[in-house]
Length: 98
Image 1 (cartoon, helix red, strand yellow):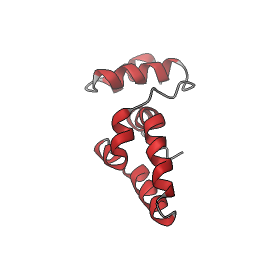
Image 2 (image 1 turned 30 degrees about the horizontal axis):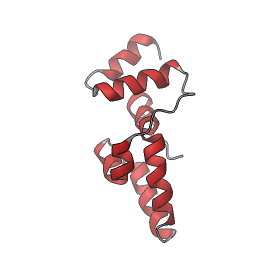
Image 3 (image 1 turned 90 degrees about the vertical axis):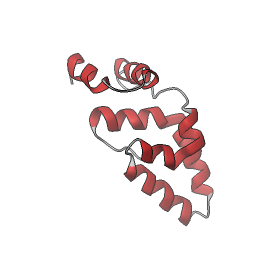
Image 4 (image 1 turned 45 degrees about the horizontal axis):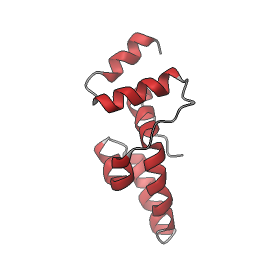
């Protein structure tokens, strides 16, 4: 994807996501994004609001089958990797679970 295509993908996003996506893109995805407090606090609800339904379903299923232990792991995962998960979906159209 060239620079113009990438910039077109950012149109309409909130400024905080535009900044994070630019950092991720410019680092060739070595930078995974800053901590996302909304993803941390709201987890699956945040994912669903961003269209990440596959990630949400996986988180719910793992949480149920692990008696809640998986929920804690995904809770932290969404906080630390929420921006990157959203980047992969919004820019590349991929729903990355892990």
